[in-house]
Structures are given as C-alpha cells and as structure tokens.
Length: 365
Image (tube, rainbow, N blue to C red):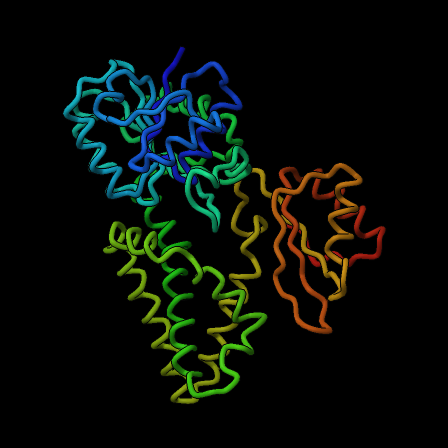
C-alpha cells in the first residue's frame, strides 16, 4: 500500500489529497502541517489516514512526498530532505509558483539520485486553508511539470497518482515556467494593483471617486483583490525576472506618454491597433491551441435570467462547460459571454443549440 506524504494542508494540499483519495482509495495518505487544527480537521473529514507531527520522522517511510507549502518553505523542506535517508524509489514533487528557485533547492537531492519533479497547478480560489479543499479544484486546469533530471517513468508515475485531479499537463523547463507565469500572471497582478492604487489617489478628492468604477476598470483590476502575503512571497522568489518584465512594461508606457505629449497621432493609433490585433487573436486560429480548450463567444442581453437561460439550455442538452466568463456587461448594452468547452464537438453542438434559440454567436476559437 503506497504511502503518500503531503506537507502543507492548505487549499492546494488538501485538494490534492481529495483528488488522490478519489482515484486511489487504497493509498495511505499522511498529512503534515504546522497547524495542528488543520491536521485534526483533515483526519476528522477523512482527507488523510494519519497525521504526521514530525516531518523528519515521516519522510523516510513515504513512497511519495508532495511539498505543498509556500516556495520559501518548499526550499527549506528540500534542504531537510537532502539530509535524510529516504526510500530508494521515493518520488518527491512540489506545487510552488516559481520553479527556478525550487529546482536549485532540489539539486542536492537529485545529485544523490533521488527523483524530484517540479510541479505547479494553475488553479486556486479566493478561499484558503484545509476547509477550502475540493476534489474538483484542478479540473481542466493546466498543471505545469518540470521534470528536470527525472526519468519519463517517474513523470508517468506522478501523472497516474494525480489522475483524479483531471488536469491538463504541460511540460516545461524552469526558465520557461517562470518567464511565462511572470509575464501572464505576476506582472498583470502588479499592473492591476498599481492601477487601483493610482486611481484611488487620483480620485481621492472626488465625492464619487471609485464608486463609479465599473465595466472595464473592474475587469482589468479584478486580480488586485489577491492575497497580499502570497504575492509578496511570489515576487520575492521570481523578483529578478519580473523586475525585467516590469521595466519593459514601463518602457512601453513611456513610449505612449511621449506620443501623447507630442500629439503623435500615428504612433497612438499604431499602439492601439497592435494591441487590438494581438488581443483579438489570442485564440488558437493564429497562436495555436492549448490542449482541450475550445471557446464560444456570444452576445447575451443585459436582462434578468439571460445567463441562466444559456446555462440551462446547455445543461438540458447534457453539454458540459469547462468555464464561463462575462467579458463585458454595461447597462442597456449586450454583454459578451465566453463559454469554454473541453471538446470541439461539444462547442459546435452548443453553438448550433444557442443559434437555434436566437443567440448571436460572435466567434469560435
């Protein structure tokens, strides 16, 4: 009976425990966390089979070790594991949001011949802690794998262990991971937070101020509500790369400032034209599709029950949605609804169904 040790029973760790439990009910799940109440809850709710109050004592008996804490803690755990005598075939993995730092910390283990695979599930929730864990948290989410020196058989072993998470696997190098996540996640969080802070200061003397914030402003700044403690840790671990990306972004803003100041209409138009062209072609038609994501965009009237009608029609036809996103809603203007499906055929069936109900399909991707 394989023993799976999960260090860190927050949202991600507890959700992985539930996913493993669903697919491998005979595996023995052991949980370790600095919070004793979290361990008590995990045992009481059968998320784990036993608690481990001493990580150093539990690790040598584990067949798989999942490090599910913050990146700084993961690095400390890897240093600790490098000092222990572990099972010869133990598999160690993590869920950290930066990978170059983690892979450097894992090098002493790898030099000893211990198998380590970096991992990062691109899923989360506004909730946190062991009580927020869900078996379906990762369903249809991308899960980065950074095998490093690990053999392909170990990657297959990890994917089989986490088959119950129903993720979409993407194998990358540590540099690729940090660059992609930095540009598409870390930098946008900084931009969103900066815009909120600057707007609050700019409108501080207005009686209306941010009370008028809606539509585009709320859409572009939604991620500014993320956990400050988590983002402090992320940026400290991916700091050099994100700082470079931030400088490049500032240079783009500076070019736009110059164009506005000099009334360079051609440059201003080119700025927005280039952005519109790129943004309008983020789908697979031009950039190539990622596995198993197929989008349908349709107009929905700004009226009570419109979105419920769409989802009810899809549910009645047994067409499963991966995700749903309202791109823009304003009073007296139709909104654009983005529906994401796991298969092209399902998306096409949904398009036919909704067109027959007089919904206007904007595009498919």
